[in-house]
Length: 473
Image (tube, rainbow, N blue to C red):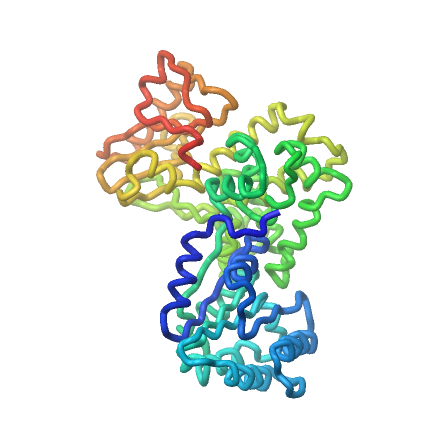
């Protein structure tokens, strides 16, 4: 499945713009494993490279040098194998000097770049020397480096303080697909799923193209999830360890953070995390949390008690695949048809509700567009307080620069949603608590986000703004 580029219109336009810039370009492409980085670059350039190579996963320095030398030979290099990276990049320079033609782009692609940086090999310094001393001065040069170890890419290439400092001309963070791109992907591969089916699959795997490619056209979302997570040879169950091993040299502390946040869907502050993990709230924990944010696993959320004062940020697990894995697949369920048989149980119904809320938070720009406020500057945050009886929490607040607030309630239903008196009064109480605690003078618009819209009834007319799942697509 999936041999054409679907979506990625913005990224493709950027690549074309850089290609035609007329000057040397050094582009860093990064993003979590399986998000389609290599596919995007290789498909777009159709392998029209002057040189390309891929780092060896968990390879030694010798194996990386051999892979680099083999790639050099593939492109016509006749020299001997080099023993260090300075010499290896000089060999690359010699190879390219014979290929460069004035006015014609010379594209170099180095994939899985972090793999090449083995201990004490001096790889990053050699790459910086190659770029600064020669490649940067060739207007035909377009060097594209790519890596799944996102935090390594950011620290060692994009924010490098040595030879590569400020040398990257462009960075491209490839995120998982939106629902719209996901729909296009399934359509391009001959699926006839409706939007609810796409939504249900997205809740479990998010917008990761490789995970989508594992579904079969004969699957329903439920039978596909059974095969991929709960069968005897479940591919997406085995993927979990590989995912974190590919991203981090020491994945265990990261897995502990993920596992803990999976048990706290509303999120935890850094202080709460350090307490529950029994670890120091120091720079090391901060770095790990930042790494997980870079990799699209966590979102760092502002939580407001008072409008003027930000509380300490909350970290929420937002990667759909890791949430699904930790909530269900990690429990070593031995029933091959677990999902199909339990899909209407209270546990899974409650999970659908939380997952739909997560999808809404991941599609704020689409919600703004449907509300007609795409061009209005906004801030999106979660709000909670213990200053009123029984506390109050609102999961999506869109705070607008035009002195208006959309206070959003999210409800998942496989039919039209019926707003009853009890739920309506809860919404009113939350609005009252928000006004009382924040002292806001902004107009508040109660906003309902549902899957299929709302049934007409006594209370539905009181909800000013109504959005259904089509807006998210």
